[in-house]
Image 1 (spheres, protein in one colour):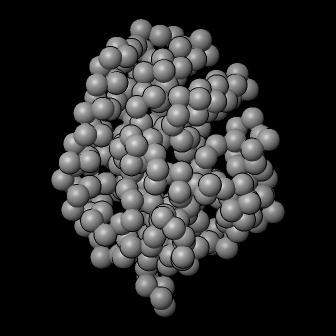
Image 2: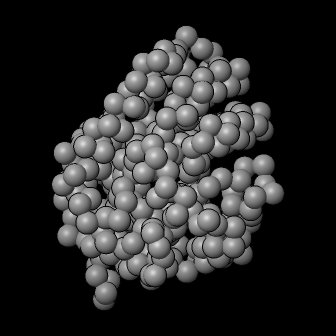
Length: 269
Ligand SMILES: O=C(O)c1cc(=O)[nH]c(=O)n1[C@@H]1O[C@H](COP(=O)(O)O)[C@@H](O)[C@H]1O
């Protein structure tokens, strides 16, 4: 089953809310944990246990694990495995992008099912040229994985690059065109998504590209349910994504669980 089909089914079953498991050092402190590998492990696995059974997608941000070196990566491997065991799809947020031959190594690291970091989907940066992502796209197709390509990011610096004009429209618009081509004919949903921040205010870009939109910036960065409704009405599927807003409720598992269930209900309504 393709990633797009699995995501479509997961959203129907659990709702569209995507939760980021991002162990910021300040959150470790707020939870009363040390800013060390033991604290990381306790934080991340508590969050996964509380949240993963109730959401369609868990999105760990790799950098928060990488900062502890190999032992942090080992925790990330467990976050991936335990989230999937709880029935959530894992979107590993790594925002990789490099020349084609190196892109293949990233694809092998994150999308080959024999890798210890194998995930359902990853985030990638297309700003070395969309074609540099071909090995990642091909590997995703081979293993029924998904790829989310940065298009209109939630940060204020993004427009400098993403709104720049080419002969065929903006840079962001070209990324969406590539995704439209990759998702053509996919049923019920393409496996190649775009990252479009919930904070961007408005856009004239065509978000109907038959693939999912990951919408970070929902919650702590100011994006609201009203923004999601207004911005993404034409998208085939949208995953509003939040990290700190949920994690700040921990380590109280019930508070995190209740919040994600309530948010899923509101997003479905
Ligand atoms: O690809 C992403 O997930 C992403 C893209 C983007 O445009 N903006 C953005 O904030 N993110 C990620 O989404 C998460 C947002 O976290 P919170 O602001 O705590 O909800 C972080 O992991 C960011 O790295």
